Amino acid sequence: MSHEEDQLIPNLYRYLQPSEAEFLYSARVWSEYSMKRKKANTQNRRLTLEDLEDSWDRGIPRINTLFQKDRHTLVYDRGWRVRTDWKQYQLLKHNLLWWTSQRHDGKLWQLNSYRVDMIAALGGVEGILEHTLFKGTYFPTWEALFWEKASGFQESMRYKKLTNAQRSGLNQIPNHRFTLWW
Image 1 (cartoon, one colour):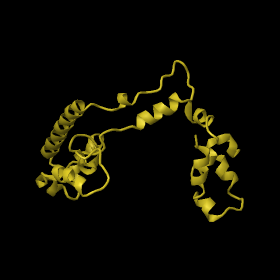
Image 2 (spheres, one colour):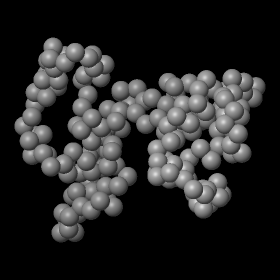
Image 3 (spheres, one colour):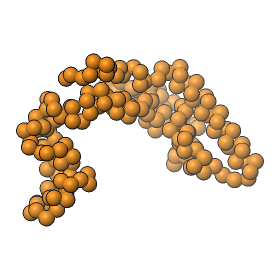
Image 4 (tube, helix red, strand yellow):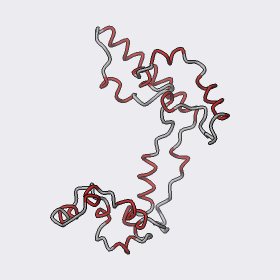
């Protein structure tokens, strides 16, 4: 695929934090949480979701583990990392991230900004579709591929005779495979 000469394709390592930075950030998030909790206690009120919204998925362990159903057992559940290590002998597939827990540690990386930057670097959706078999589908725009999007294409198809599968979007999957086949 081609792209503009001044537009660089983003490197994935720019979007992943090193573990040292994650630990420092975690300590800061937990100290902010303790300050918010002390402030709420002095005001004789409880912490609300709005108070913790900016730090909900931050810190190790994540702040939201305090509000899970099994939060009381997490305090005493010290051997869960060892148990997950021993699971490799019970399960047939290899788990590359065996030392993490999605519930306890949360997602350790957010790649939404990487996806946005990569699409922009490759020339946007239209630029990517120029290098696929999208023209073979004879759709006027790429929005026509997604039935759930509110677009002019959906309005024009409203009064046509369509099957229930077409109306619910079940016929999207083969079209997507054909359109986005490289």
